[in-house]
Image (cartoon, rainbow, N blue to C red; front, side, top):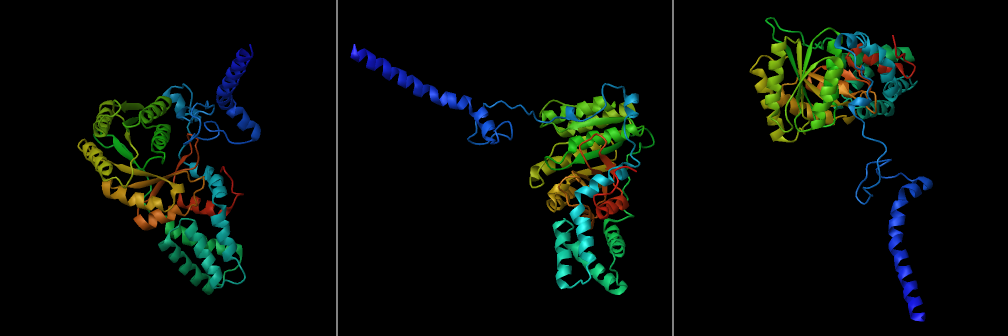
Amino acid sequence: MLAVVLVLVAAGAVATVARLPRQRRGSSLRDGRRAGRPVPGVDYAPGTGDDAEVPRDTPTRTIESLELPGEAAPDDARDLIDPAAGRMVRLRGRLARSNTAFGRGLLALLSRDVLDADAWEEVEDLLLTSDVGVKATETIVANLRTKVTVLGARTTDDVRELLRGELLALVGTTMPRELRLARHEGGQPAVALMVGVNGTGKTTTCGKLARLLVGEGSTVVLGAADTFRAAAADQLATWGERVGAEVVRGPEGADPASVAFEAVAAGKRSGADVVLVDTAGRLHTKAGLMDELGKVRRVIAKQGPIDEVLLVLDATTGQNGLLQARVFTEAVDVTGIVLTKLDGTAKGGIVVAVQQELGIPVKLVGLGEGPDDLAPFDPEVFVDALLAGPSAPEAA
């Protein structure tokens, strides 16, 4: 009898031990919340060693979460689109708030009673950390030192005017920034090719640009030549549906050049004004992928001229964007820059650096995630926003 009791007790102990790991695993989510610790799969993407079975209750953001027009017909949708004119001014306050350290920091330094060697070194450091670039920084500091000495500028207003003039000279007020996307005589649509590395926002920018063009009365065809990522074609199709633009796509893994070719052909058949071709993101260090991009360009060119090759750069990448721009320019002859995420952690100086180093104009800037947060770049509004501080108005 005693032996039977001992066996039962031992069996119960084994069963209890066997259940413990499962109970601990099942309660890890609750325990983590009680302890205030971040939970993998909920508060951040799970990594090595994290429990992959934890349910994710914060789904990845998709294009559907943007405030695009509802199921409106194309003509009705146009009425809901902010016009291009004034977009940059409307977003001035947002840009000013994100670049307060750059503009106000420079004004504070240059307004000191004594501008000695240490003060000028601080000015130089601030410009460099704001992604202005070495060449442009040296130019600004040299010119400002001369003008401050000669003119004796000391008040904030005096210094602001001097700094504004230097920044405008470097950003450039005479560079051609207009998008050359007018339909050609004889029915040939204008063609724009969107290029860039992974994660810069090419597909979203393509959709926003289509929305901008439709709002101005143009008919648009979108070419989903990013055939390596099925979500890219789906995302572009969503934009096309919402703004009333035809979308040409191919099967996953199809030749991107063939999809681009068919998109231009479809634009010619339908009498569209503009064809926008979205391409897959590719690392500028991968020679094979850059060669493929060159092939896409050559294939499109067989049907007519390519009016714009727009390089989409993430403004938060700073000086790394310059290297990307150089390589892409060699591969496909970039005609204009689109700077996205300029409202985030970007320092603002990248606008100066890109144009000084490469001579390629910034034509569009993205200042937010809203569908109308893509604006034609205005150098004067941009510089004024840098120097205005956080009190700048967001609407005009």
